[in-house]
Length: 264
Picture 1 (tube, rainbow, N blue to C red):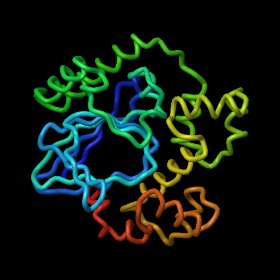
Picture 2: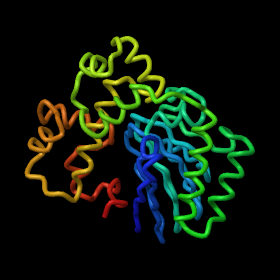
Picture 3: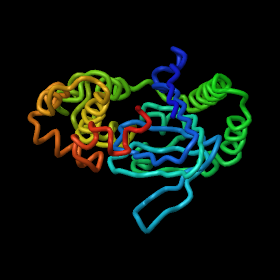
């Protein structure tokens, strides 16, 4: 399996975290665990099935948006596949699609439903692109045009979202609201609108994601990993990990769960 990331141009780095490519030549099951950010996906070879539970399997989209989530979902395919993705900061939902990020929390939507004809045209361009460099160019242009049309100010809450993701998942809500000169009520309301989650839940998911990033890195113990990622103790770490991944961290870090196949 091949996984690769591509950095966005600097002028779009406040909205796009990175582009990514995942390709495989055999069947694969993807574990979509809790995620604080938003993804736009294009399945340009093969389409996955959405496994809601063991008795409910439905066809997923060929191109669409996956909102921030705090629940586990699984997607499976029994043949080779290629996916091109854009990993957005969560405020991309209101900035690019003129809707509250909360409306997409734990949800997915096809591009043709969100953008009608424009969505179908964008999907066709991505599917017909010669390579991933061209796909990046197409999606950068799309993002630039949607940002220009929306004309939303760069709000302080956007910086708060980025800061939590990159630096401060352990700060409490009062400290965050004071840091960005907002009342706690204003901060929580704007955060839910632009991130799709409450600040507390968002921070918990970011902390969980920072722990999963230690896969394939040396870890002396679960306790030391918990402390390094900002957990009070190992029991809180295990509880959050189970909630957001559906498994014990020992199972995840063993590499035998299936959830890490794309990382190997």
